[in-house]
Length: 177
Length: 188
Image (cartoon, rainbow over all chains, first blue to last red; front, side, top):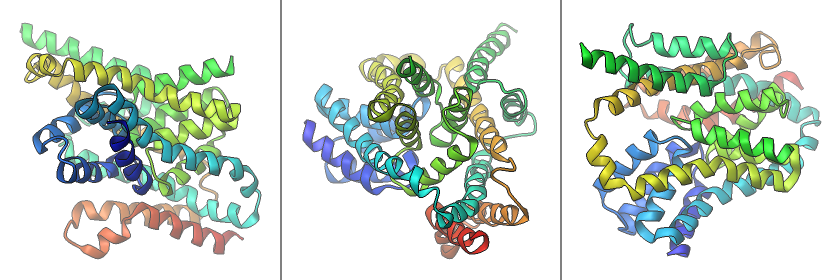
C-alpha cells in the first residue's frame, strides 16, 4: 500500500494551494469517494482527531489514513506524498530567492505583498471568532494570549501549556464545588 | 550544533502547533527570531511564498529556514523534525483509537481543554499578525490601504456566503498576486 497512498497524497499535495485546511475536501474526495479506503464517518472522526492533535493537519490526516489503509507502509507513503511537493518547491525557490530578491521589480512587488500577507493572517480571525462562538467573557483568553506573546514576548509554547494546565485546574475546582 | 538547534526548534513547533497553519506561524516566528535565522521581512516574504505555493505552511517554513541556515541537509532535518511529533502522537492515537474514544469522548477535562485551546489559538494567530505590524512591512500609507482592501475581501465571504463574486475575489492567491502587481507599479 506504499505507492497508492504515495501517489494519492502526492497529487493532493501538488495541486492544493493554501495549506492544510484546503487539502481536506480533496483528501475526502480521493480517499472516501474515489478509492473508498475509509467511510465518511471515519473520515469525519479523522478530521476531528487531526485538528485536536498538535502538528500540521495535512500531515496528521496523512498519518491516520496511511495507518488505517496500509499500516506502516501506508504511513510512509502518505506522509512522503504529502510533504514532498512543498519540500521540493520551496527548496527550488530557496535556491534562487536570495538572488531574485535583489531585483528592483521583485522588491517593489514584495513591498505591496507584505501588508497583504499581514491582512491574510489577521482577517481569518473574524471567521474563527465567529465559529468558535466567542463571548465577551471567553474573548479574554485570546486577548490575554495575544498580548502575552506580542508585548510580553512570551513563547507561544508557554501560553499553550498554561491554557492546558489552567483549564484542568479550573475544571477540577468546578467539579469539586 | 546548528543541526541540533534546528531539530529542537522545529520539533517544538510540531509538538505545540495546535490549530493548523496560521496558528503555527507565531511559534515559527518566535523560534526563528530568537535564533536570528530570519529577519522579520524574510519571514513575511516566505509566508507570502507559502500562500501561493502548494503544501502546508509549516513544511514550507521548515524547508526554507533549514535550507537558508544549514543547506540541503538542514532543510531535510527541519522538515523531518516538524513532522516527527505528529508521527509519534498520531500513531499512538491510531493504535489506541478505540480505547481513547471510549475514554475521552464526553470527558469534561478533555472537551474543555480542546475548547479553551481553540480560544488560545485565536490569540496566537492575532499575535502573529500584531508582531508583523512594523515599519519594515508597512512602509507608508499605501501599505495600509493594501492591508485594508485585502482584509475586507478576506472577511466579506464570512458574511456574504452566497455571493459568488465575493468568493472568487477572496482567494488568497489572487489577492497576493494583485498586491504584488500593485506594489510593482507603485514602488518601482
